[in-house]
Image 1 (cartoon, rainbow, N blue to C red):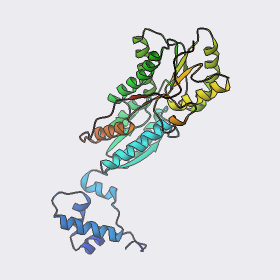
Image 2 (cartoon, rainbow, N blue to C red):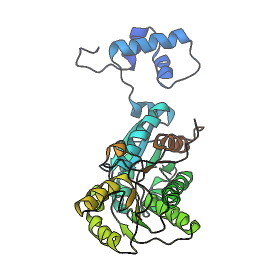
Image 3 (cartoon, one colour):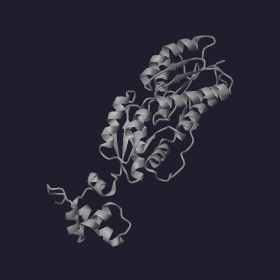
Length: 330
């Protein structure tokens, strides 16, 4: 029954080892406050000695909670969603919860619904969406029923996305750029929409129109693919002198493609990103980008989904100026 045995220890084994009733063990498992500290310590020591693991499904029968948060995610190979899932996992653990993740094609409501139903069948206490698409949330609201539902970068989070995109434009305007193009994310992503809106608002405030716009799928590959058209535009006399990319990965691909086309960044064209991913400072040139508080946003969403008090404010986005931006060419 211990760690070296072949039979998994149960509540009765723990109770016998600790010299208490099975009800007392259950109260320890369910964090009941009405226990003497020495009794709790004795039961926890017995659990450790026997290698006892809490069965969340069994505990749910007595408490109506599995202490598990379900996450519907997609495109985890991209830096943004991957970082979001990691931050949610950390935030859930801080709240003494666990994460159960189901992956779906977020552009397909049926796929999203199936993923959510699989999580709901496990009795998760709440659902959180990473990388929400325009069709995702309505489908999830329908299937979630009474289970709380939240999404990263929506509500107040979306406003911070808008503010961050505006910071990149304001930085370029302050450097003297008046012909600014956009390399936007996919139009059916809510995060891309928020970043589009923030950039558009900042351009309007500066009294200028986008010099051009291209769309990618967040990947470095689409940034590199767009580079040929961007280079052609930059070479025109009235072409853009700067490009604001909606994330760092597209900016990375764009810079590599522009260099392959014989252009220099930032001497011929400035480039900004968004996210401040872990590698942004090591791009060539180091990438000017927008830093966002992904960890704080994850804590906010977990607290919202579970009905818990917020533990801290989410930091506002910050422009991180590096070597990929400069004043426009003469």
